Amino acid sequence: MLNKKCKHKITGHIGIIKSELPETKNYPEQWGIYWLNGSEGLEHAKRIKDIGALHYWQDKSLIEIL
Image (cartoon, rainbow, N blue to C red; front, top):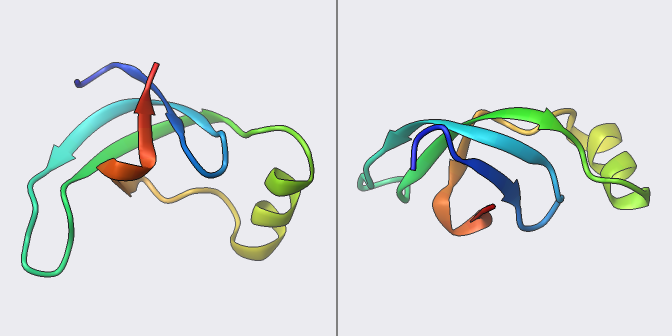
């Protein structure tokens, strides 16, 4: 799945998968994602205000492959 375009299921951010981490005792399987842009509207504005940009590492279950 590396270098595939993807979308965050909650925020709508679009990115490209760049790396992968296996599941560990404390974390689920994750993808490292280079984020290209944000979603539109109030949800995106609130997220940026509250916590800033999305983290590079994301739980795979939150990511949709495009």
